[in-house]
Amino acid sequence: MREKFSTIQPTRFVKRSVLTVAVAMMIFLACFSALHAGPLSSDDVKNLVARIREKRAQAPQAQADFVEEKVIHLLNKPITSSGKVWFQAPNKFRREVKGNSPSVTVSDGRQLWIYYPNFKSAEHYSLGKRSPLDAAIATINTALNLENVENIFQISGAKIDNGYDLELTPRSSSTKRMFQMFRLRLNNDLFAERTEMLQPNGDRIVTTYSNQTRAPIAGSTFDFTPPPGTEITTPLGR
Image: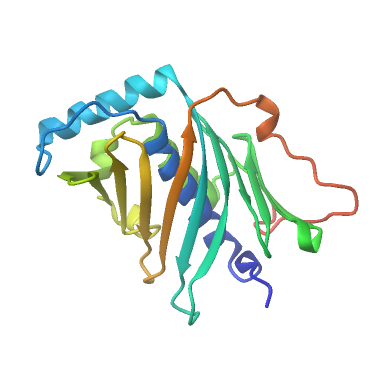
């Protein structure tokens, strides 16, 4: 069975993939100072956001290896994949999935490509066209740029034995239609170890990370040209 869910619901697939990557990168771009033990107060959250802004300004790029498990309510078994992600603030990213069903998702901030090497096919999405995908990316950019982030997400957290747990809950009904909640786990070195995203239909995506780094990323990482012979589709008609 071809694990290409975008053939069925391309917009939903893209929004889910983009949101997952972006939220993970929001954590990678932060290097938190020590927080108080126990639940975080509102002042702790504000200080945390300020530190994220400061660290993102110092190092606006991040990359990491990942292992991801998708629990989809229409399937009996979870789907597990692994690969690597790259992010460059404010809106460039690349996600490569390895294994039996490889894919490459690339955005330079103006367009987004999803390439399936096994099928020699690619999906192309133009951004900035006021599509549902643009709405999803606008929400992501708000989170990544941390402009009024506390007005969009309710942020809570606590100190745990081996690090910190944070939870982001959307405030608006429109954002809740995209996702219900994010849980983020940081280790004692203050790097993201795990993210969990819950969608309104009950689907759940759990991702664990390793080898995180903020080393410089070549600009060509976010470029994509379909190989010769690739079948190109535009699911949103633009």
